[in-house]
Image (tube, rainbow over all chains, first blue to last red; front, side):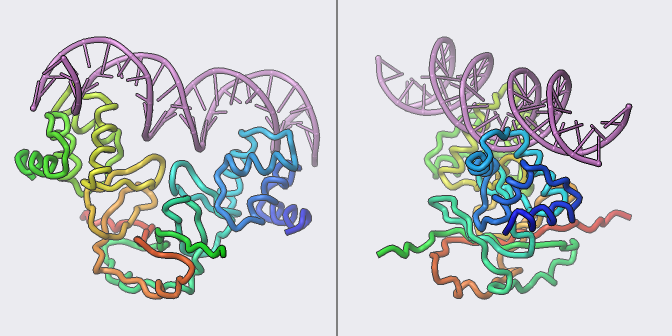
Length: 135
Length: 135
DNA sequence: GTTCGTGCAAACGGTTTGCAACAAT
DNA sequence: ATTGTTGCAAACCGTTTGCACGAAC
């Protein structure tokens, strides 16, 4: 994802593309992992040494409100997910590492049996261990 | 659930049944909701006015370690679940209220297509709105 | 009399907020 | 000139911890 694409994307979502915001968006959106705010701060500081924690939180919250990313309350603290389309999650129970599981890969049946509520969304959260593939 | 049953249950899990612990267990285990630590504290204080926040946390963590309940990092902060058998969750997106969805009611297919990880557990988290049933 | 449980208050980690300085329009 | 963005530090909330007292074995 290029700087220009990010700038356009921010604008398209009504977010003024300041240098800080672009740097944050660039890191978060071009990232398959599910970073915490602290991780975002650390990594953005490598490109942009002078940026405060508050700005990172402000920007991530703003992007969340504008639908550019999602927040998940997995583990201690919140984690940011650049994948805003439907998908499931696999969480490594040892490392806490999260990976996306494509929506089409799994399917749920029986949801129609839930009569006393209106479903707007659902997600499968799988826990286990990633297999090592070294050696 | 009676006091005596709770006492036995605690003992069976290697937890010495002090008055405080019994009061906490009585509240949490006889409870379909998914209370936060603060909610537990508030409610236990109604029966047992002198109990500290630390004791509530200590006891809940202890019960968690001994397998008497589960913790879920839903929303801000942790929530305690007295249902330790497999089940799914429905979360009301307005109120944050959580209800259990029986395991048998839903089923997931496609889990066998996940080859690069070992699955130890999974859960469907559904979001939506409970239908009002007043009137 | 040693171990265990409890209360208090301080510390902690993640997040939000108030405010003053500054940049953009 | 007004509005939007940033940094700092303080505040905040949920949770954990250190310590001293008291109860249980």
